[in-house]
Every structure is written in C-alpha cells, then in structure tokens.
Image 1 (cartoon, rainbow, N blue to C red):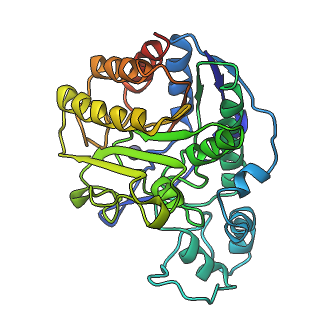
Image 2 (cartoon, rainbow, N blue to C red):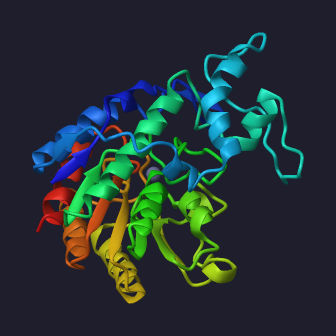
Length: 338
Ligand code: ZN
C-alpha cells in the first residue's frame, strides 16, 4: 500500500497542554510519527514524501486570513514584550463581529479555539506538509484501491478559519476536496474517539460531501459543543451529516454495530471514494480512555470498511502514546487490504 509522510511533519513539537487547569506534557508528540510509521510498515505500507502541490488545495478549504495567520503569527507573537515560546490565546471571540483584530493577541483568540493548539516556530511548516501528504494520498487513490496518509499534526478539529484540539489544517477535508475536484463523489467517515467538529463545520452547508462521525458522546467529552445526533447539516447540507455519539467505554461489538449503520449511510450516498479520518484513540489502551476497542476490534473495523469495495484513503487523526498505537494501526491496514 502506498503511504505518505514528509520528514518536516516532525518539526511541530507542542510543549503546552492544559488539563483541568494544570500544565501537562502534550499527548500530540512527534514520537507518534515513529510509532505510527512502524505500525503502517508492519502492514506492508511503503512510505514516500509528497510532492508540493502548492497552497491552492489548502486554500480551497481554509480562509486566506487564517492561512496568513498561521504563517506569520509566531514571529509577530515573539516580537511582543514578554511573549511565550508558543502562541496560546488568553481570550476567545465568543460571538464574532465584522471587526477582525489586527493585534496578534486578538487574532490568536479569533483563530485558536482552545489551548490545545499551541503554535511554535515550526508549526506552519509541519501542518503544511501534513496537508501535502493528504493531497499526495488523494492523488494516489486515482490508481490505488487504498492509500494511507500519516498526517500529523492531525486535522479533524480544524475549521475553515480556526485551529483546535491539536489540529491546524483539516487534512481529511483537503483530501476530500481534492478527490472531488478529480470528479469523485466523496464521503468522509470519522472514526476518531472525538467528534470531527472541524470537518462537520467545513461541509455542513454542502450536500455534495457526506460527513459521518462515530465518537464519544460530546455531552461529557471533547469537543463538548458539537457531535450530537441532531446535528444533521444546515441549509443545502441538511441530511448530509450523520453523527453517531456512543457512551464512554463502548466496546468492540457495540462499536461495530454503529459502524455498520454508518457504512450503510455511506453506501446509500452513492459515493465513488471514502476518506477515513482514522483516529486510533478509540483504543482500550489510549490515554484518553474514551472507548475500549481492542486490537481485534481494529481488524474488524478495517475489514468492515474494506467490504464496501470503495476506493478508500486512510488519513491519520488521533491515537496517542501507548504500546498498542502501532499494532492497532497495523490491524486496520492489514484488514483494509483484504
Ligand atoms: Zn481524537
């Protein structure tokens, strides 16, 4: 299986992470790449660096204001007296108005949804190449039945103009848009334990891309404000978003039942390609402890997706440091190749 990763993606190394008001080590570490790469290679993936497809496909999803912010904010933040090494907002724009702030502090609050997306000196470079890897994967799908993208930093919490939850550029959305421009009708299936709120937000007014997410009930789990079953899309997009929230601690059988429901919806959409936002943080061994999917469960997930017989691009989302991280990926990708 072809797989995509650029070495520059390791350069983002977030230092700050707040849990219940306390500073902790960020779970979104560069070491994830080493473990995920080993897991993918054990499933027969052969990695290549993506070509640079340029900014256009990224700008098809994200606003120019936001892209400019991501590229320049670190330097502008550093120029402020007493600024921290990483850009972390201390204010958030509750209700946006037409007044876009010029101050770096105001812009940080405007474009960063939470404190889990600190921007360091190399964040833009890493996020840019993570997105380029996703585009490389989308283009490989023209010739392959499936491909894997080790997109790190991840993307599914990023909106068209906002970072959040370790995410800066929405890799799965960028890949889906690229596939659509190649003429495919696309569905995005998000199996990360957290709701894909950014992806939903990007496509929620569109009927041409189906978004489906299976995740821990947001009533008591990040991202809290999105991911409920009643969010079905807006305007033209009504009916093109499906959320399947499940209780904390959900195990293999219940998860697979929800997945069957999701896959039925995807098949009913009549798509030519599927982008799987592949979070592995549903694992029983994941530090987030949302669900309790086992190694065997991951093999069943990969097999169920492959049984649809549709060209499928696996785009990495979450999945954090545990000994199971690489092996869980191996299980999915072996099953994905039938
Ligand atoms: Zn997640």
